[in-house]
Image 1: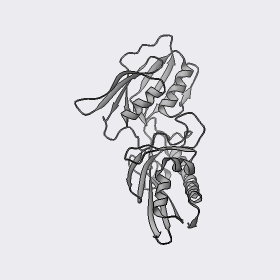
Image 2: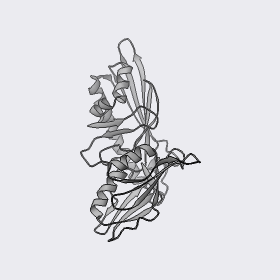
Image 3: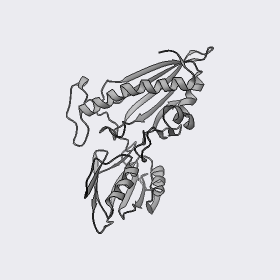
Image 4: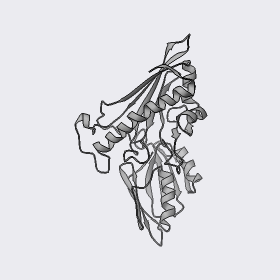
Length: 290
């Protein structure tokens, strides 16, 4: 995910700028009018406005989780390099680019610790979604299904971008939509134990107001019968904020989704994760029980 403190950019072609920033931010605008487009970016906003002239100025500060990959992606979608990535004396990596509309983007990595993955839980709820399957396959084979990029994309969605490393992408593409609206763009591997556990950040579908805030998923594998090659797969989805009805409602911070929005996302994944686990069963040849 990408986070900033708030910005207002002038552009000559509002529709073209909307499409470009939609791809860069990985989400649809919260508002799109004839003279103004507004994106939610973390807890802040990016506003694009029509203007005959563009003043680059000093630009805004964009905090990114992985400067190298963010820089590469910016250049791929048409940004112009101003200052190549470099490490400052304080260990903070910085860079600067210009969008296709003349606005300066100052990128920084490492200012606030782990980066701009805005986790949902501030005072974490005890709620969790738990789904378990017992699958007729060796544990090593089940692990491969979760950690081989091409295979993961085949059974979980239509495609995937995955790297088995802490901080590596865990992006499952499920929808035939523009970049940023296809699935779990921006999600990352949080931790793993070879053939035993995989943890990753997770986001809501593009049409949910909760999408900019990420939760956590842990997949655990254990042998039921190593001789007969039977594996227990347990998926646990946590990290929900204390805003949902079972915890007593609290007021959401300005610009953040409230209890109703989070409850809707929770209910969505209560339905979705069993379907995902069933897809895994089918991919690996069936189960011996739930």
